[in-house]
Length: 232
Image 1 (cartoon, rainbow, N blue to C red):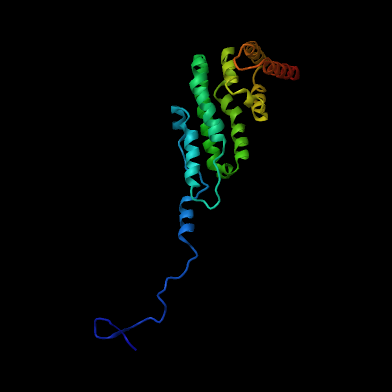
Image 2: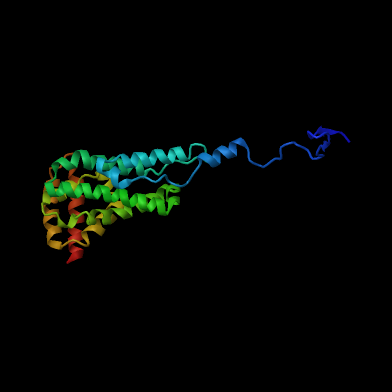
């Protein structure tokens, strides 16, 4: 039987087993998918990002796109990231913040951070939330009341702060059930007198609020009246 010299003059037997690579079932495509397709959100330091503003939401959106760029089944990031989170974070920061009292401005910065920190914590604990846009919206909206109250919303004394904070969301958002649910959760833990003073100011100002029709103002007035009737 032939073979290779082993260096001492002896013969090294040649293995009869095939040297053909064995199939593993892993293709280049599937390996690539394993490496770049992930449902686990990349951890971000939301507590630091929130200090600079609203970039957290864009980063979360971009991170989702990157992690799902080569998944077999294509999916879109939760619409909340850009359509609500980034949109209203920027509106509050760029438009509402300059109109608030110093106390209101401090509240806004704390609430902005609370929202981003709570979202990050929820995502890391339950990454599957990202895979369903509707469930993600519900999760995100449910963090709002606690984020606002923990930031000191109940301690704001200037009714103008309440007016500008409450009217920052566009009217179409106020007409959504999720927005009213948030509002009800917040006002249910704040002293009636403070709410009434603030909402009376809101009601008066809303009459002259640009882009609000007479019917829209009337709808707001009716909601305020119904709310206080229920609180009696």
